[in-house]
Amino acid sequence: MVVAYVGLGSNLGDRAAALTQALEAMDADSRMRVVRCSRFIETEPLGPAGQGRYLNAVAEIQTDLPVRRLPVVLRSIEDRLGRVHGEKWGPRSIDLDVILYGDAVVDEPDLHVPHREMHLRSFVLAGLCEIAPGLVHPVLGETVDELYRRLGGGDYALDAARPQLVSVAGVIGVGKTTLAEGLSAAMGGLLLREPYDTNPFLAAVYGGNHDLALDSQLYFLAGRMEQLDREGLSAGALAFTDYVFDKELIYARRLLDGRQLALYERIFPPVWAHVADPVLVIYLRDTVSGCLGRIHRRNRPYEQRIEAGFLQALSEDYEGLFHDWRRCPVIRLDVAGFDGRDRDQLQRLAEQIKWYVSNR
Image (cartoon, rainbow, N blue to C red; front, top):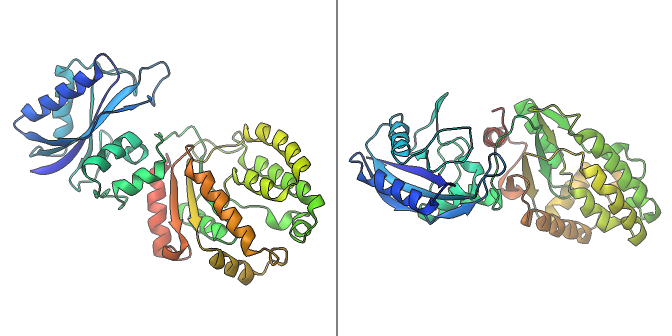
């Protein structure tokens, strides 16, 4: 007998009754036994607009059905319960999907185990965390608890029509550029760096000339708009940045005076409307002393006056930004346990990233 996990969903008719009937039908089959089931979770549909909300659950089963046979049996249960198969992600009275089948890994045109988007669905991961919190994804090598934390409560879908933008975020000196360069080289994606060295105002601002702070921020904003214009980035193409666009407001609120900030906040939203959202953020974290050490070692003259208090304030701002982040998954990496220059660690991260982009 193999332990497998089945996702259940319904957004038509009596949804709770449909899930209950599916669980009973699965348990009545001599080739499987329902061991436990998560609570029922209500979610917004990911498919076409105008649908009703879904009721979802995850069941743990034991089965002697082969991995390729289990989906066939589940589909027969759907048919018996009145499921009409229509458009992808359209409304359905009952939906039964194999999420995991032991440690099996199957990647075929008509079967993907583990489910190829389970790590993007909070409602699936929440159910797994409830009934099997220590369960490890057989390919990603992460627990379902960790995969759930990456989503921040959101549900996402792979979309090849979008630029596959991966943004590396974190405070000054945490190692963003090193990691973005390494990932770009390892995975072959376009690299978009922050234009620090070409900003003609930055040195003066870090030197204490606050009159030029707005000029410096607008220079960066114009550069971001050029790099991240969603019309300029190719649909489906992989790209890496060593920043996340939302950091612009963090720095503006730290560096601009009241009048400068009022003007900047009027300019910012129209620019943001044209910028491509990332499909994944890699958020690097380290101690203030660790970041200061890197800043001093790389010895950019305009950065040498940066103080620990400023970095600590930025660190708190970044934590606030990603605490309520709902735009894409976020992989949090503590630099104490991760070295972006280590080839093996970099390759393991690259293999994980492939599961969050549409062209893996």
